[in-house]
Length: 196
Image (cartoon, rainbow, N blue to C red; front, side, top):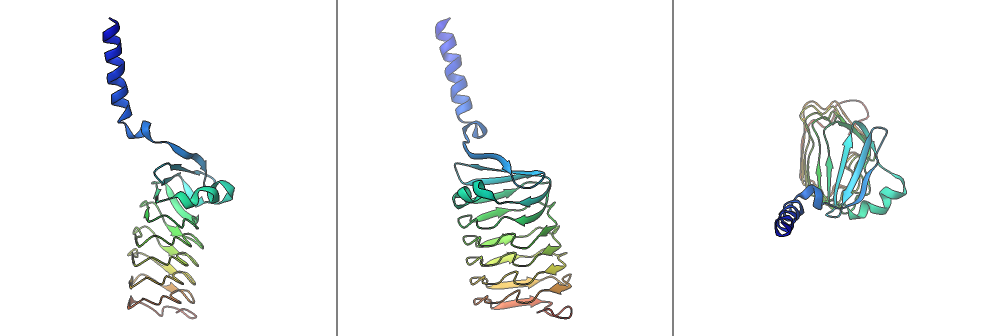
């Protein structure tokens, strides 16, 4: 009987040790990321942001761990990014199709990200959204995008091509300043008074 009990325990241990959810260890687990959102960071560098509404990251805990982030995963239910800046080491970001806007300073200083696909649900890129994302080479803008804010892509020195959707009605001042590698900028460039 004792041998059977040991055998069962061994099987259970082997089974659950291969389960990623049980194996995952968290440096931060469900810290505040806005009024109705939380963020978690596992030991592999995966930051998961979940909940509803606006993401507004900040505070000592966030800045203590943001340099350990390799991948950012925004879950369904998140509708806006107010601030998710200074993730210097993140090289990948996954957006949900519930996202409607990325506002001022949303992804500033995400220096390691090389490419992004913004979901078609997004209509607004605010001021300085991608400011100083120096490694960003390609970005696919959403087909229903309306606004690109001032300095939105400023200092994106590796950005090579950008297609602006016909749906865009406003491009803010200096949106593409100091994009020194930008060879192709296609689409609407002058849409309303005072724009680029």
